[in-house]
Length: 126
Image (cartoon, rainbow, N blue to C red):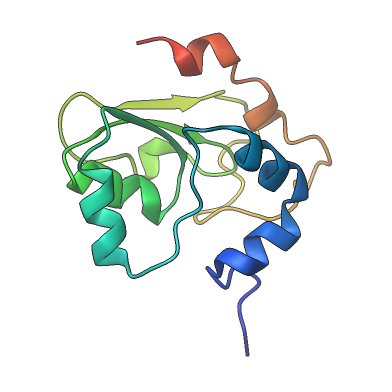
């Protein structure tokens, strides 16, 4: 059985064409292709990262980079917030949240307000 999240750069580019178009036009954006050790080394050069609740969030925090993590269908109180000091975990704190321990592809209520209600300004706040 294969996972829908193959981790393949090519599959991400196919699944996320708008993101791919943006990344192609943004000089500071780069698609990474390579092993996790290489990604960890690159992350160590970052000043800050904005991620969702994923393994990349944990790898970035482990590399010593400040993380702003967005939690949607999950919740930082479940124990998955980035480890260490200086990180921020943003959560809409809705009554339907968390709807699952490890996240969902689709909102069971059909609105995904858990992520839509996290304001851009709060994400970009230092």
